[in-house]
Each structure stands twice: as C-alpha cells, then as structure tokens.
Length: 395
Ligand code: LMR
Image (cartoon, rainbow, N blue to C red):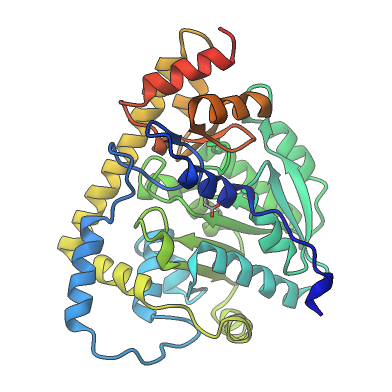
C-alpha cells in the first residue's frame, strides 16, 4: 500500500532549521525558525521554568491520566492570562479553556470542532499568514479563503483592503486573526483597528478565531491581549488558540490552550462536551509536563513575578534589537518599519535570490520570503548582518 507514495518536501521552516544545524561555519547566523535567543545565541530554559520543574520533580506523586481537557488549574490560569483577571466571560461560565498539545493542537482541534459544527465552514486567513495555518485548518476540511493584510510595498497593514474583503464574507464564516506579533510580518492591528474589525464581525455575524502565539513578546502581556479582549467582550462566540511555546520558552513540551466562548453557559457546556469528544478521538489527552510547569509558575506569586520579569526582559531585548537593526540598516535603506513592528518577525522585503546569497555567501539564514526572526540577532552579529545585506543589495 505504501509503495505508491511520493516523497514530500519538508516544511520550509523546519527544513531551514535543519540546514542551519548542518552548516559548519562558526559565524553562521540563524534568523529562521521563531525561537527566542539570548545574546549568546542560545535558547535558554527560563529560571522560573527550572525552579517549577525542580518543585514538580520533588512533589509529583503520580503519572496517572489527567483527561481530555487537561489540568483544570492550568486551564483557569490560562483563561486569566489570555482574557485578563475578572473576565465576565469566566464569571458567567461563557468560556471553557482546554489544555492542548501546543498552539498547533489548539488550532487543529478548533478546526475539527468547526467542521463538526458546520461541514462547509469557510475560514478567512490573512495574506500572508504563518505557513502552517493552511495545513492545520485546511487539513481538517475547512475551506480556506484569504483576506489581504500586508501591503507588500510598504510592509504595513493594508487595513482598507482587509476590511473591503471581509465585507464579502458570509454570516457564519470564520476569521482568523493574529492576537499580536503577526507571523510572518510583525505588522499588528492598532487597538482602534481591532475595534473596527470587531464592529465588522458583529455586523456581519462572523466567528472570530484568534491565534495568540506570542503574548508578552510584543509590548507586554496585557497590552498584547488588548485587541483580543475587546473583541471577546463584544461577540457572542469566539475561539482562541493560546500557546506557551514562546512566552514560557516551552517549545518542545507542546503546551497550549484552546478557549471556546459561547453565548450562554448552557451552550458552552454542550459545545465543550463536543470539543472534548473531538479531542478524545484524536489524541485522547494532552501531555502533562509543560502545563504542570505553567500551572506551578502562575499559581505561585514569587515564581510568577520571576517569570514576568524574565519575559519582560525578552520583550525589551526584542524591542531594543528592532531599533538597533533599523538603525544599522538606515545608512543604505529605509527599514524604519522594523522598529515599529512587534514580536519576533519582520520581512526585509528582499528577493528570494538575495535571501539565497545571504545564506550561501554569508551564512545568514532567513525564510525565502525574507522573514527574519529579530530575536535571533544580537549586538555582536548586527554589524555582520547589516554589511552582508548592504552587499547583496548592491548599496
Ligand atoms: C515559526 O513560525 O517559525 C514558529 O512558529 C515555529 C514553527 O513551528 O513554524
């Protein structure tokens, strides 16, 4: 049965990660996959995470099953992190939060759930969007439609074009929005723009689905969630995919959450039972370790403060690098947009051929689209990257 299968190319982001690892040049620079790096180019385990793991190891008494929804303690902590403390949605029983294997698990289970609700569900995604959104959502059988998001010339949000296209969506269509730190562009909606999108979603009866993969890495935990929280306060139904990969640095532990908002508590209870049945038929239950770490950190005042301080440090470092990078490139081009954008990613706006030259001739890795992970830079490699870029641009 297997002999008819043809080999598939690897996912471009993962392929780039592998090619980088196999490159022996000592001065290579990884601006590819979206992982945070410190000044030494490492992706360290956060101190709060280390301490939580130590406590878990000492205090853990069983490895027995948890259940398809995961840990209730983790789920309540994530509800507060994403929706804010004292959220009326939590108070009124209108939201359930379910632990998932990473943000990908949340995205896919939401897609499977949406297909169960309506077999011909359409989901509108931004152009561009994270490449893995397409197989995660399309693979569950949802029909993908695209709305323009980024003006390729200015590398800024084309808000007029976005609204104009979403006006053509049908009631019941799903709109996927990036909560903050848009991947791959770094170009975020302002709060005023979130408010306008919210009005459009309300007026047209669309279902918002927010991918919140980078909370805390744009401007801070609450600032990054302001648009999402406004939307959540205004609509009857909504889905949110949360992730602890970046803000807790738990990438390989696969730790995420799916929030399901319904119009009433009764509807929410029924909808959640359906979602849990979907989960049971896919992976049965999520892995426990990463969620236990998060629950331990968020449930302890000192650990939580330590984690917030570390996260703020990461956020500030990215903001510093954004300004330093834009400054280093300013002598041969206008890259000021990099300083204005948020999160790990920005496009440089150079051609695939120039991207290829940076990789081959200078050992500088970025996605073919010219998406760079700003967090992969540091003050030491900045001049090297700036001069290589100047050379391939012929300036
Ligand atoms: C990225 O966009 O680089 C990250 O979200 C990692 C991934 O899985 O693609």
